[in-house]
Amino acid sequence: SLLDYFNKEYIEGRKKFYYPKSKKFFRINTGEMSNLETYEAIQFQLLSNDKKYIIHSISGMILYENNIEDCYDLKKTLVQEIKSLFPNSVDKNYKQKHTLDKTGKSIVERHDFKLESGGLVIVKCSDWSEEMHSADKLTVGIISKEFRDWLNNEAY
Image 1: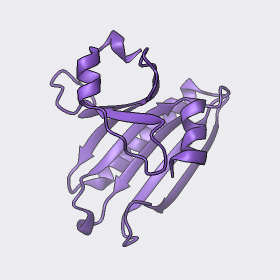
Image 2: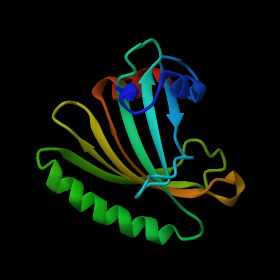
Image 3: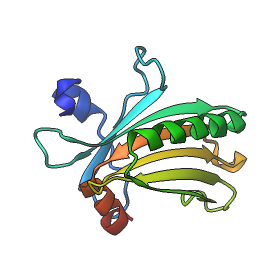
């Protein structure tokens, strides 16, 4: 439960509905935390009607201003570490245009690990176009089967 780490007021005060077709899940970001050692921000996804605030996804992010190659280098290292942690996972590496950039100039290089539970571990570098005014970043996350199914079938 996210309540093990934050109080209800903190969670509710940062609640954002990000997905266009459904408000079943919400997101909170904790970018202002000063005690993070590896990541610059942590993002959580939770069910909207869950009073226990069970975490269905957690992601850490590192920003890469003007040095996306460093992101790709760390991604390679993390992929090897995750392969050793989840040897029975089915993994897939791919590169695609970012769906949120209508110009088609932003690129996501992503590696997914499908877990036996149906959940997913993701490592990705997002290389945003200048037009998007967003920082390039590395994202490492793990998502539950329920959240993954919702993303694939209801969120968009």
